[in-house]
Image 1 (spheres, helix red, strand yellow):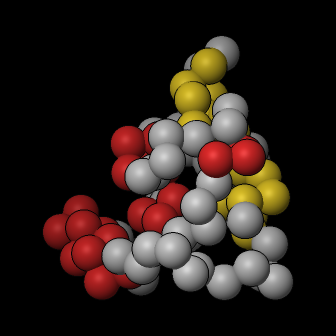
Image 2 (cartoon, helix red, strand yellow):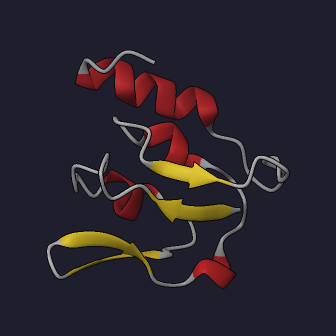
Image 3 (cartoon, helix red, strand yellow):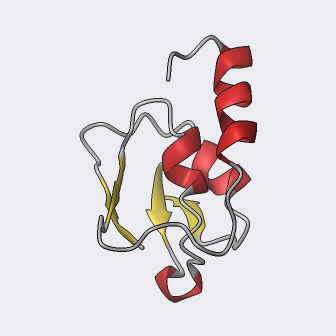
Length: 83
């Protein structure tokens, strides 16, 4: 489960907002915010796609419902971001 977004690291690229399958992020006041934490399905897609690793997760909860890690590694590779 997501704990928070590290505001110091976040570059507001909005990739987490675009790629979240549960649509829990919102862009408000010129920054990405967690709007619907209760809807998080614990897939970690936001963490995988974040180019600066600004998503802080609860390490006790592991992805269970959906795992598209391979897909996001490919997206980052196409963007020229090292994983």
